[in-house]
Length: 118
Length: 131
Image (cartoon, rainbow over all chains, first blue to last red; front, side):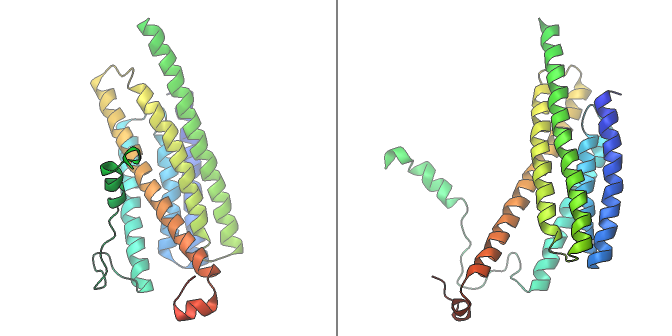
């Protein structure tokens, strides 16, 4: 095990402890499990990325992949819950008469009519 | 010549990887301190959001360094298992970097909208018109 791996491993352990403390504090203060989960997962992702430094084994790679996936799923859940609480429009259900904004339209226009042709 | 290249690349990989790890570690420590401070003083759920955003920026920056080191490692990856491991790590890092970028952009847009609402004249807000 190289020095870099030893150092990052030790820091990653400390960050995991910090994640647990910060998550518990966020839960105690806000009484919102979703906020606490977000705080916990953000710091756990940082710990997972630190463990990936150097030459990690497959277990570390798998662990980081699981944490990142859980973070994404929890993030999607957080956003859905927030939208449901605020009473905003749900994804996929647009008010009548409003068209979907085309994110690709400016890019397509730039490709078809580049600046040098203007 | 090949050994020299492998040695130089090996040193560069360690240096760049250490830079990425340092950025992530500093971001995590800073975010933890801010989480504790915000939790003890402001006690609202919204107060945690800017800290999470800044931690996301630190992570994204650290990931850029680590992806750079992954690219450097591809110059010297002798065994098939090492290449497979490298591909898995690069995939995780790239996916996380992409999602972090999207989240930061979305949060920034929401903050800008909230700022715009705050600066809008209350009379205009009542009538639903803006200048």
